[in-house]
Length: 387
Image (cartoon, rainbow, N blue to C red; front, side, top):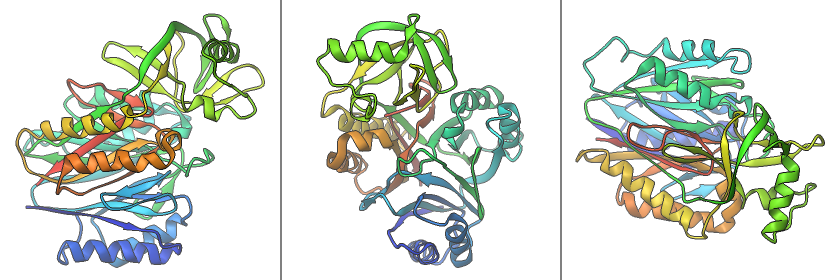
């Protein structure tokens, strides 16, 4: 048996917010203590107080989550709030772990994330999934997902990078009553039915392809041998757009970069121009990558969320959905403004009676066999958990 609910609060007090979320959860689960409580919370909260309040008021077996940049459920959407997916299940097995020190050693982080996973040695459950939430400001999230995939083989992964309401200063992941930076957490989900995952973006390449000739972490230094900022300015001029390097975000949000892969273009959001002519991005872009500027039609983001949701439902292979998680980029929310609510409505329309909760993230994680995989920006990721 699997019972689930989504909960939401916009209370300002961290103590009261935790109590309200816990009370809503227990009521919806008919008093059953949650097997897992997946929390997304604005940087407006004191995380330790919030987490302690949730634990004290509903004592979930596992409390996991991350800071966020916009929180939502099937019925709610705000930016100084908290949302959660709460599950009680006798059919699925959950385990959780944390890896710390992303900047210093990704291999150590991955080893710490792998250590609590039961599915590596327990084969009673044919479907193995992992929700991964990371401090993406520390970089290297793509590398972590690649290493997890290599070490686990059959696992599928989904999730995103923690946010801080578009301040891009400090983000946190949660496990128990701890809120940690420079870290990643994992929730292992072992099940006898498949979890449905879908991933989609609506961006298309425009202009000429370019090679990344120099980069450092999340900073592009040169493209085709020319300073990155110079290439951006030339593209803006050629397409009749305004680019002010003192306020570049309006241009950046409508002109993403796409890394060419065999399965399509993996999106990267430019964030800032540097004095040395480099461009800081939301995620790593390796040297040697072939990239393009990307553009999107006004309705395409909503259609992408709709398609990702439909893909997730299809991959349930006929199982009845219980609850869903939805992740999309903070850059999508900022670009769409008030229209972002329509993207959430598209997800709701496809899910029907199935509730969902999620957040705007700094990058989205999707590692799924047969689908576009890796660490993305401005990409809709949907996970549907079966009954």
